Length: 150
Image 1 (cartoon, helix red, strand yellow):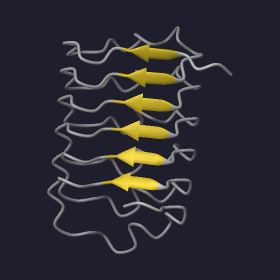
Image 2 (image 1 turned 135 degrees about the horizontal axis):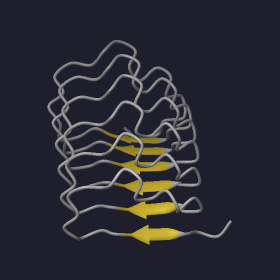
Image 3 (image 1 turned 45 degrees about the horizontal axis):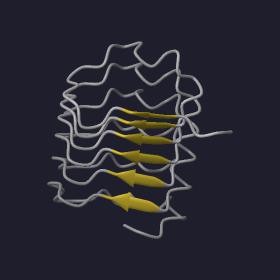
Image 4 (image 1 turned 60 degrees about the horizontal axis):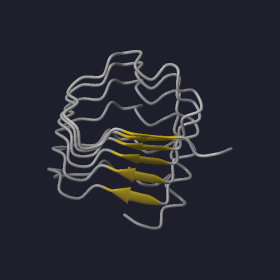
């Protein structure tokens, strides 16, 4: 399948309408970094089932809807660096079983849900630097058997 890219980085986008990407079902790469997005509609990515790369870095996202990534089973790279995320819903990454890279650096995360990474068995790279994490749940990384970089 040919790569289909939508590059919207370095704009002043502050909101995303819930159905803004609904017609882009063949999209494989979506770049939304360096905007002013503060919230994500719960179903905003639901029709992007072919998506493999999603960049949301350098925005102002403070919370992630629990099911926001549920339809992105093909996603291999998700970057949420440098937002204002303080907590992660417990199952937010559960359906991302193809994910190999996850960037969460530069947020305000203070605690991690105990099983937040349990289904990410393909993950090879995880970035958690520059957060406010003071303690880690026991066994939080145990199921990341493919992980080579933390």
